[in-house]
Image (cartoon, rainbow, N blue to C red):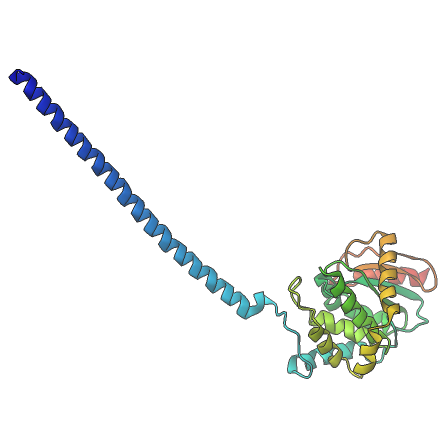
Length: 276
């Protein structure tokens, strides 16, 4: 082998070694970079997990901004709500599902689900002035009808609506319904339990709890809910609240309201019927 060939082979071997070292260095650097990224991602994941846990804790502590726990009877909050409802309804005749003078010339049928938050808007908005002016004045009576829309479990819906109808056996349906809406929990949270219904019943002034409990087993009340649903279906109602209005003893028509906070559209319909 000539000296020239030997030098070329040595150079080639040296280049290969340098190339191999460069490749190893590149692989080592890449692995180090990946390790740094993994560490950063792990740290970021820990931070995110801590934030999520903190948010969950806050939501649990605050009830998501809306309490789903039943309001206990005889507490300051319950006492205040009962006082408000009693002030609104006190002295107005009640008979079963009907609020108002049975001989009132105009009848408003109110289809509702006790867990419906929009029905609560009506209860706190347009309904009180309607009761104070028209119902208390003897020109209007309101019938409460059941229509399942917001309650997710049919059995829960029947139980809560029957509880209200059972209070109606003692002419106390409207206080029960009003208290339910005032103390309504977060939709879909499962707040309607037997304890919740019992607490409501205990808050209704003068309600005989033993008679109320017995009345809840009356099959006629479940039949009433079915009849209400059939009537609503015949009218094409798919949401709550929904209303029918008409001359007492005559045919009723759908009431198209523009607002549940303002009673203006209800007033217009009532005045039109009174003038007819």
